[in-house]
Length: 608
Image (tube, rainbow, N blue to C red; front, side, top):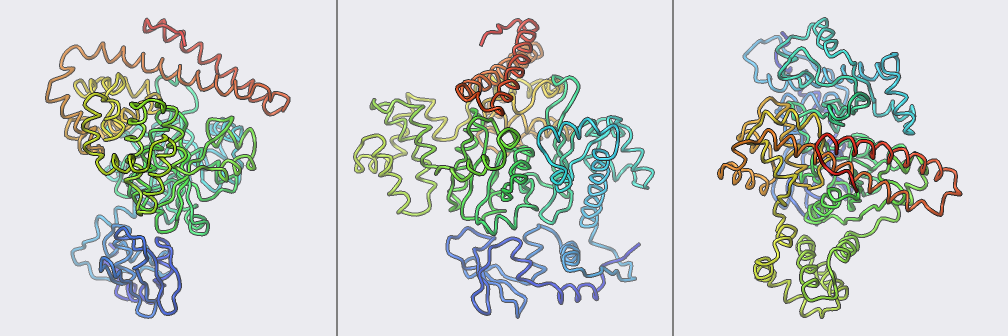
């Protein structure tokens, strides 16, 4: 029994800890003589009022009046108790942790557990990494990732791995290392229903690191077998050492580059993020299986002035982009949009065209206002009064999110020019936008959904509401579908929430509501359950919905491939384009076969 952390260790940590170095991991600081200043991490501000005084080993914010020493700062930023803050600082500054001989009742159980689980995840990450690089079983996964253009240096940097196909191996191995069943049951590494079975098996593994570079969770990509029976990605749920809503993939690698460049790229997932880093664009990070959150933006706000968004160009990606624009603008960040040409994602550009092309795409990112105006110009008819009204109403939330009067005035002026409407009229509608909404939305419910961010309830979303009335059917749904199969962004969020609850072993109504962070979705769930919708005969309808959703997803993928093939026409004299066209043709052929097979299975038409 190691007792409590000794006073000697605490004194040594306080003596060694450089508060400027510690705070700089979270806040961009500027030296002003005896003090350093930056924007406060505890409240939203535009002008720096947060000060650090090295001589006194203290920080203080003149705006919100938060203050304290190095240890308190770590406690506040990492949301940990005093003992863990001491351990974090001891590791950072090379101080040996010593424990007293007193075995008084301890208050460190939660802190110790967190550290023990971090140690476990680091060990497992090492094992998976070895399995990818050094074992015959992992060779196919290594071949897959290298064929996608990922170098050995990048594999080492991100410690990519392979989880064994034998789902009982991990439990047996960890038991042999004296880990208890009770401890492992809470680790998130094993099935809730079958505690001896590994949660991840026969997958390419992506360790998720905290800002200190410690492994705290995993993502696993499906590579072989029946894709209809296994989700493309499996991700760790929230754990004692990991909260996905306030963690960013690759932030540990990117934070120094974000600080140096004063900008950050938010991209779609693991592979896109890795592709950016391999191409030398090392300020890229990714949300972890969920929509971007305010807490994730706050992680980078202290270092970055500009956010570049690199999400997919499909319906769900566009919805995610528009949502992220408003969230980032509300936190006073400049926003640009990266638009990819001749490829669906950064990883594909890296593989087929190289790092220079991807760098050019980043350098040519457009302002968010230009992106939104272009998007709305395609969505609405600007030559009709009704189209102009809808266009303006959908652009007003962007203006609302801007933080200065100059920005708002300028954007209103640009909107007026785009619609060929006087600035006076645009301002009048903007200032009375709530009344305008009520009048317009009474007859145009689709505008209501986009302006008020209400949930779009379509067939995809209703299929998920049906599952809430018969939760036994979710096992079938999650075995056949992934988030990528849903076009409706709200359906994707709800599916992700249901999957999280399913993995936690609790799909109850209360559990789903507690895991869901979207107020509009919560309201729709409550309305559906209260009205008794889908109360009877749901099993057959859910099975049919799953089949139709899969067919619709395949058709969307087919259309995207056809668009990509069309864009390559006329450029086939370039060898890389010829090779890409061949790949696209093969992908289209496989999708056509799946659509026909699914159409026969579910009695749906297979046409485009």
